[in-house]
Length: 79
Image 1 (cartoon, helix red, strand yellow):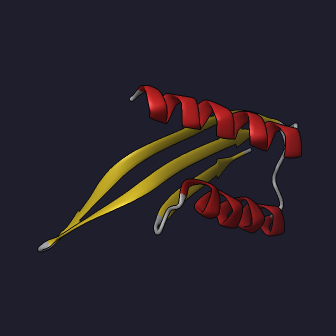
Image 2 (cartoon, one colour; image 1 turned 90 degrees about the vertical axis):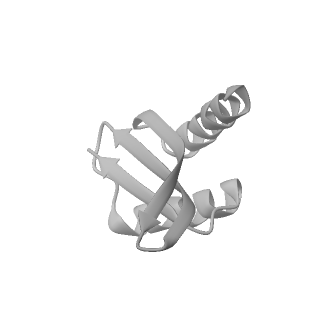
């Protein structure tokens, strides 16, 4: 758990440098269950003071997938 907390905090600061309007960042590993399948994935929530444009959202999502080596990522933007 500590390594995940460290990773989340580090990524928050990396994003904050690129997007100063970001207020908070949540990153959590999860398991998605479907009939007969279990898939490991990441869930993320990013809260911003100002609205993040769609182009930038896509850029953040693609960067984050590479940064955390995620095959599947569910990301929610607030603000």
